[in-house]
Amino acid sequence: MKKMKWFSAMLVAGVFAFTACSDDENKDVYSELSPEQHKKELETEGIKLVNQLDAAKSLKTYDVLDGFFANMDLANAQPAAAVQFGLNEIMALSSGVKSTVNLKAALVEQTSATKQFAEEAGVYEWNTEVQDWEVVETSQTEATFRFDVDGQTAEVSIYNFTAKEAVHQDEMSTTTVELPLTLNAHVKLGDEVLTSFSLEAQWNDDDTPKHVQEIITLEKFSFESNLTNTTSVVSTSASFKYDGGVIYANGIKVEGNFSYDEILNSVPQQGGDMNTVFAQQVLEHSNIWFQLGNIKVEGIFDVKGFMEELSNSFEQTTTEAEMENMLIDLINKYVITYVRYDDTNEIIAKGEFYLKEVQDNYGGIYNEPAMLMVFGDGSKVTVDQFVEEGFSGLVTEIENFVAALDASYGTPVQ
Image (cartoon, rainbow, N blue to C red):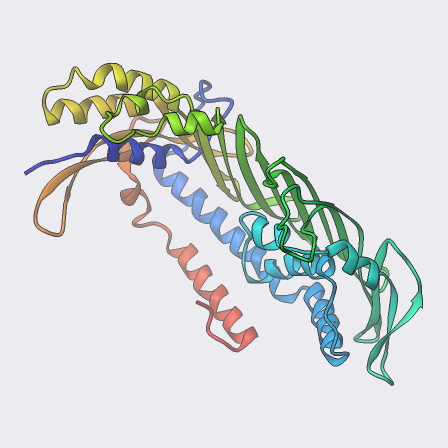
């Protein structure tokens, strides 16, 4: 028995399409390399990225921050909210690549942060005799802490902290919720700035973030995230780089009309039909991209065009097979996907969707959309076929990297 739910097909199409957008989707310039040569290039790129990450095992920044928090523990002290947020964002990079700012936990729920910062602002030096911080200079704009690390003067400084009161406050609460606008920090060892951090934020009238940008430089590594949230665009992006070159990056952008009324009008009501979904005016275009090193996956999904033609074609299909074929035709028409070399913009492969037979756990058979990789020479393979062999060198490098981390930190790396 074959079966396929048309709405599931739309969702799968969206998932596949959410591998990004390009302003050059009509400029199909294929690389002249063969599929096997592409495999070799991908493996070489992967090995290079693993080797770059090897530098993360010996960053001075974490030695300085470990010393700072150790002194805080000895002094039985707790950094102010603004200090904690900036340093925690830096420390978060040690356990993996961040995808975006954790807005609710990190920003919105900080209470009376400006008051705490004002109370603790100043320049402090660590007094080893009394095991406590000593104020050496008063300040209203910075909280700077100086101490020794391996015979050198280390400095952790947080400054340029500004915030605004949230529009909506709990009338029963005795504290005022504040939303940060700007925050800067740096970590120094001797005269060298090892790490810098900056945050800039704007807020909507409902206290949700409108624009947020976070930038961290971590010796030769850097991390940047951006978020935009308006009634016409919702987007987020992140990039993780080493010495200016991309290790990993991703992003999503959705355009449309994100008003409450339009979203509500697109939801089928009890006793209604799916015409409201077909006529939706919420989503127009959506795209997502991601990049590993020099390899970038990109595309675009014309949601509005897809839904309008689907509405016109839906009633004309009389059999399940016609429905399935109609959906695949629409997906291939409104979904564009590429895999490219980022430096040359040459296409490695272009996506083409087809119907794939799948067996469920009960022995039934159904069709679902799947994607082929189409190369410049006209050859086509599934993604599984492309990656199932030819990457042994990369696997070896990854295994060696994990083993080195295990030896360095003394605990298994999951």
